[in-house]
Image (tube, rainbow over all chains, first blue to last red; front, side, top):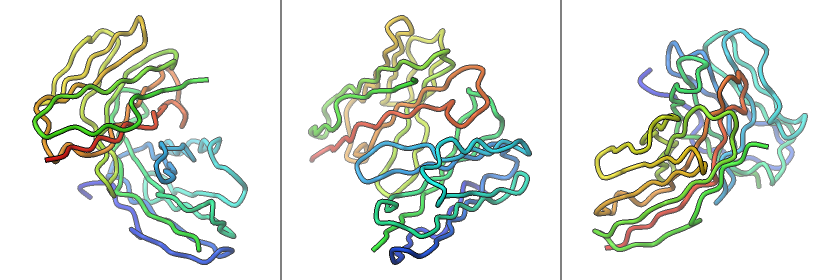
Length: 115
Length: 115
């Protein structure tokens, strides 16, 4: 596609429910990042995929968070037993190569509200 | 620990005026620094990239500077427009890393341009 696409745009869920967020990276981009952005705060790194290498999960805040990506395609971020503190915008980004100079392109984000 | 600090946290200016946003970082080893613009409800979009050897780079009314010795960068906006209202995020990349935390994000400066 023309850009990074995330779905849904907005998600309201009840506390305790599981949610699944989807990210379609730009075709051919080998690197994919997930970030969380709480209201009025900066981006918080969650997880990073690079090709077929083992993902860097060092940013996941708890074992309720998990993410998958098959090859260089779609990624899903799953949050189990959601809590109100999980309310945030979840941003996905992809880049062409794993090079520091390569620009990361961001999706529009999924706004998650846990009530 | 790699850190990026931005100031001010928020800024209100009148349309047509100039402003300067600051970014200080402690990322090492340094690879490059990007300024991103994030409109409300959208993902960040890259404005400029600065490498170690570059001191100044312009993109239209945006001019970024980099002092690699003092580890400071600034983003100067000239003749501000209402559409400049957004968050401006400083992102620093570390050299030689192949992991998710190679990108360190500042918390952003929220700019509001008033008519």
